[in-house]
Image (cartoon, rainbow, N blue to C red):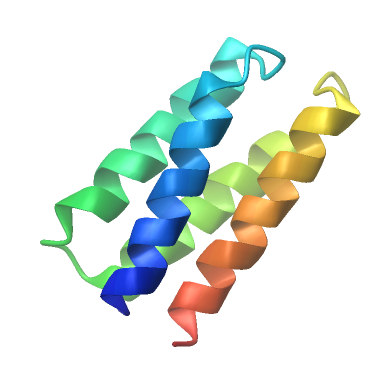
Length: 85
């Protein structure tokens, strides 16, 4: 995993966590993903794939505001980029 890339993704997750328009249940998933990525002791590909899967599950909820979905899709794209770097 590219150190610079993971730091940038962690910063984006931190920004999303500060966004008051994002529902709490989405923030819980983001916090879990952030903690897993920050630890860097597990297999990176598994960690990133798990984070993408969990975010993808929550983004498909019809009750999530469109603004939150856009942020989540952006994070998913960034995580996918890390997997391929």
